Length: 176
Image (tube, rainbow, N blue to C red):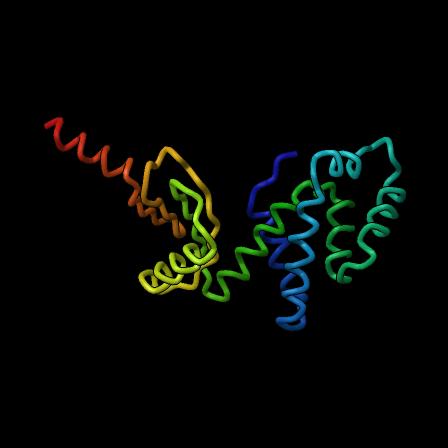
């Protein structure tokens, strides 16, 4: 059953609505981040299997989530009962996006031609934070096709300072 991202966002907002304080928000976020990795196709298929009685699936889910915050356990039971358990990873992503947005943190995807050392990554992120005037949560990737330099995506803004982009631009300029 396909679902839109807005459904995941509504569940994430509802979960945040019951958070008593920032500590609870951090617990919910950590819990969902961890659980989202566990909810792979076989797990979701097992939890949605109509051949298994709902009560048995509910009991299995409750046993697996016994150490999670009560609000997270309740959300998962609700998702199971409404046959929406498959959107757990999307809910985790939506919760992360909402919390980051509230804290003024922007996501950055930094792609370089070579693997950067930890210090180089930290320096690059600090420089990008200064120029963008935003706190960044950066993820890194390597694309040897860039030849050199980097491609940085911050939100919907793309900065392509790769050697391959510069060579392409030069080629277009020389073609005229």
